[in-house]
Each structure stands twice: as C-alpha cells, then as structure tokens.
Length: 199
Image (cartoon, rainbow, N blue to C red; front, side, top):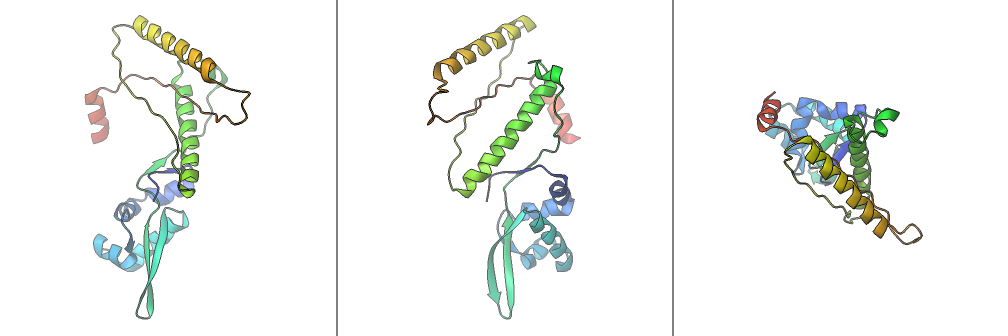
C-alpha cells in the first residue's frame, strides 16, 4: 500500500469523493471482503458491491487475494493508499506572474507542479521497492517589519545561488539533478485555522 495517492483527473476524484466510498476506503486500510465490509458498514451487500466495483475500476481499491469458501471464491481487497490528495487545478500562471517572485499564483503553480512530480516518482519508487531521496526543511520566522522580511529573503536567495554555483556539475554525465523549491507565506492564525476546520 502506498503512503499517498495523488488524484489528478475528475473521473477518479468523482469516484472517490462519494461519502459512502470515503467510508469504504477508510475501512479498507486493512484488507477485507465484501461480506466483511457489508457487516462493518451495516449495508446491503449488493449496494456495497456496486461502490466497490467503481473504486476498483478507478484503481482506488486493489485485489489482495482470493479465498475459496465452499463453492464460492471470496475476494479480499484493500485501499491502494493510506491517504489521497486531489489536485485538479492545471491552470498556468500568467507570464507576468511567473516573473514575479512574490506572486501567490506562481507559488501555487510551482507547489502543484512539485506535488505532481514527487507523486509520479513516488509511484515509480513504490513499484521498484525503492526509497525516494527527498529533503524537507520547514521552519517559522517572526519578522518585526516588512523590511526585515525583505532582507531575510534577499539573503536566503543569495545563499542558495552561491551554493547552487558551488555544487552544480553540469558537465558530469553521472550526476543526478535535483530540484529545490523554497516557498514562504504568512502563517495561518490559530483562530482562523480552527474556524476553517469547523466550517
């Protein structure tokens, strides 16, 4: 089972976002049969089978094994991932936004592209039973005024540029390219975050 599955098309998103199917996926973090699920969710087997077929058709549920029970074969299935992320907005930022390093639209586009790229490589690494080498650094800085923020971002940009020049080896055919993304945005206030979650 993958740690996360990125959903990028409306058909799969639609198949997953049905409230009952979300409950089925939650239950299928552990393998189970249709009969076992029907009992756990207290619903008719025929209705459950319909939703299971839709989830399996969209590769949100996978077959784990088949067990013989008398004259019948019981299918054991599970969710293909422990969590799901839906990313459907593929609109490109305008040209003037791409050149504006302070554009929130450009930040969102870059973040979306990073998520898609990492999810694609994560899927390949999962199939190859390998780990994907990544690095994440997250911190919070409180600035006393906009000038301090500007000075900080300028210094960070200069430092990153210096390190990139130092370690970048464009002439080495054996070298592996890595992308580094640096984003910043205001921290969500605790009360605003709580209101959004309740809404």
